[in-house]
Length: 185
Image (cartoon, rainbow, N blue to C red):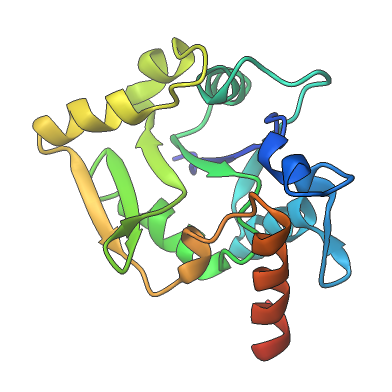
């Protein structure tokens, strides 16, 4: 049986990051000698999962369109882990746990200390709804509907990296401090 594919979303404009004083896109910002996006890709590789990067030139009209592009490009997958490209501290074990959660329920929502994180995972049964997404809404409505049908696995993880995104220069500095305190990823 095919395994789920991690859809790495990297099409956003990163406007908040630039507004905080940055001169580069947040995914290209250097964190611990690598770009933020490289950290995310490396975590996915270390998890042993197949992945697809959504970063079209010129971006997209929002998260919904980005998800639809990634899922449409990987229709062969057993499911998808939707992972924003600005979570450089995410651990490979967390990615594997979310992927394995698809064996229990068709939607998996990870949490860290009661805070919803990423990636959110969907089984192949959600292909039509995911590929129909547009604009900036993302897949929140799909999760809400699945929750009403008791099809969501809420997965508690001990990885703050699933919620610690990079939106500002202060976020980048905090991630850098975390890496210095804890060695490497």
